[in-house]
Length: 118
Image (tube, rainbow, N blue to C red; front, side):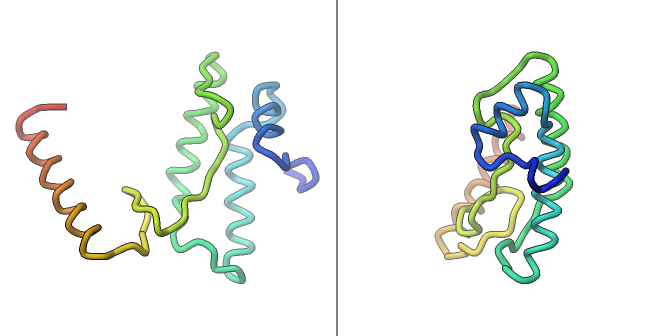
């Protein structure tokens, strides 16, 4: 995708996706290419979840093609700061509190799975 054809705002990207001019997968690929190109210099990302991002974009494009839209952010890639604890990315917030929270969360999940509670 040409750099000058990339939408500059979320509203523009959302409009282009609604009108069929842009897919989430195309936008995600562009973002991943930019991260690969610039991150060695900027060192802005400690974790890039490339495979899952592409899979999710494909799913969101499929939903949109079937008339399902979750809202203005449907299909828009986002970056999450590494001090926010997420399930799939490395976090820089590894205080004792976060480690304890993860342990409790793991134990609760194991308990509910064993009890077949969802």
